[in-house]
Length: 348
Length: 220
Image (cartoon, rainbow over all chains, first blue to last red; front, side, top):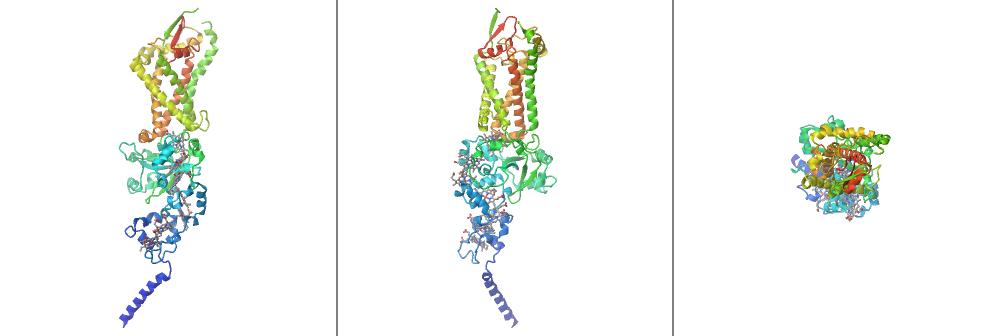
């Protein structure tokens, strides 16, 4: 009876398949895991993983089981909590660096990083970096502590990533973000413009083409000027933030950051390099190099960044000097003639 | 002995105002230079203290500018008379004054065409210069300075008006102009009948008119 044979075979197949899974060990792949953990309806909110932002990180290449060993096939019904590989296993040098600072007693890697959204330094926006600290360091307290010694505290805390002062990374550069001001009174803090809004602004074109007109991954002074002067983008502007050039994890308070000179006396030479950070679809940022000189330009390129002491213009220095020399012309010129003709006034 | 004729030119409030202002402006020029060139100038201590000094002096000078304005417009009501040059001043006064300072003075001829009285303290040249300084440059440098102390709350407006760089450049250029004016002002103040004459007047209030000598004062 072919029909019973066939059904027997099917039964067998099913049985084999059922057994085959446990036998072959951890056969659940990332897609299986994400089938539950990447779906908001299947798991609790705290177990949910954003597939898109996870997918672009280097961690995605490790696979879920690269870090979560021993997830059994009964999972989640087995009630076991899958074991975890520590960050130190793969990031030994960063761990060493971090432990050299004083902060390692206060927070672990996972307190600042989401392992499923492990973005690189350049992918993270200044404000998001500070959000990593804000979870434990209440903004109000931070303001108070810094206000005791730092003038224009609000400005400094808004315009600098915390890590510029609290890690040992010495090199700084200016990062331009597209910001807007939503408040009608126009007095409130600015907001970072998100990808969706820029996409609308670009009207079907690539978002990068808003600033990088020719799409060569390099923004010339002319291109920057076009963006700044375009009346269509009036409510948007490029705002500069002074940022460390690389991430360091020696997290503590460094003595030279008390010294305003660390930033303000760095001189115009240090103000050459800058990049534009454009938001991407998934909430990270893409950096595009900007031609030298943007930070120091007076008129067209950087209306919204000024680091007193460092971004002075050479041309203006000369003009100022000429004006002061003009003021000295009378004392010296007149004084000289006065000296030569002093006899004429004798006896008067 | 020469016959001395004493004129009371500068009232006490004006003298106090003048010297506070003078100290303030000199402080601002020096600290301003350090703020702009911190790598090269460390005259007044750390960057933080020099910023604090500059800001404080800035406010003092701003307040003193207000007091000056209120005093002359509402108390003595002589602002226009003292500071605004008349048509005659512009047509003849300035030329006479220039001829005196750059010609007759050297030849030892003639005397200063202007004789200061409490109602007419300044010669035509001074009037024009002081008007430009007190009503033009000083308010401009004060306003830009106060904006720079409060960048955070008004940033949007600053950017709309051209940006931080323009604001700072304006502040710097006007500051340089005032510094230039300061040199000229200090030099001209030595051109009385004796080098210290005007300076003493600004301190005591009394101008000593020596017979046959005109005096002019460089106070404002």
